[in-house]
Amino acid sequence: MYNDHITLNMITPTNDTIIGCARKHELPMWDLSTLPLAVQFDVLVVACFPNRLSESILDRAQYASVNIHPSKLPEYRGPTPLFWQLRDGLSVVGVTLHHMTSTIDSGDIVSQTEIELPLGISGPEANRLLSKSGADLLLKAVQNHIFDRKPQIGKGSYQSCPTSKDWHIPTSWPVIRAFNFIRGVTDWGIPFTLTTEADSLSVRSATGFTYDKSTVGCKRINKHGQHEVGFSDGWLQF
Image 1 (cartoon, one colour):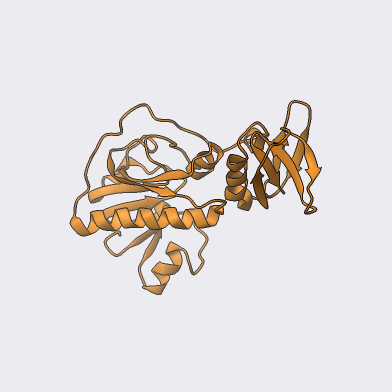
Image 2 (tube, rainbow, N blue to C red):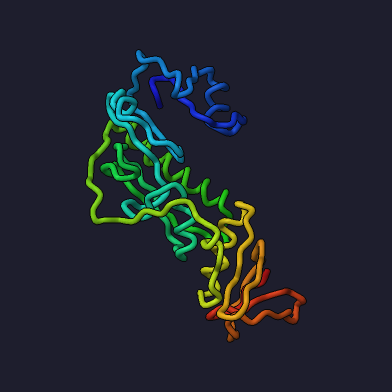
């Protein structure tokens, strides 16, 4: 979406990335640090890009410089919005196409949509659904040559990258919240700590759950030979 150019920065080339697509279609590519001054854009598009672009870059776009962000802004600004939406127990998450400014994820909104995540969806699959929805928002704006500017309403929220404490899961949570969170971020490869007032348990995955009367924080082996721990309204198998 850049006047038939692709601009890159620190992306590993594989066949299913934007670099792979650019090579397939023989589009020129540049690193931002070597981007020629003469290059101008019709539309500059960013998605899941970890660095802030300078205003001198943003101003090169004739129509708009936009970002596809996987939350319903102004909520869940920051670098890992899907992680925090899953941790907070959301089953419906958002996608926003918005104008970029010098302030992270705070520019005017072009359009938004929501997605209901299937039960126990993995992080990669959730990202694919979010990417598809974001691409649909972008294509509609490009095809119609309309990049609306609706101010973000409210203070919103910002979350940085998770720290070690954010992988701790209280067993006072509803069991479905724990199940969806674990399934959604297992691909990070970081163990989870299930915590009670008196004990803790390290797990790396969740295989299922059952709604049933439980003892919060109790660890046991059920009649099917599965290890499980009690949450507020059921048992989590791992």
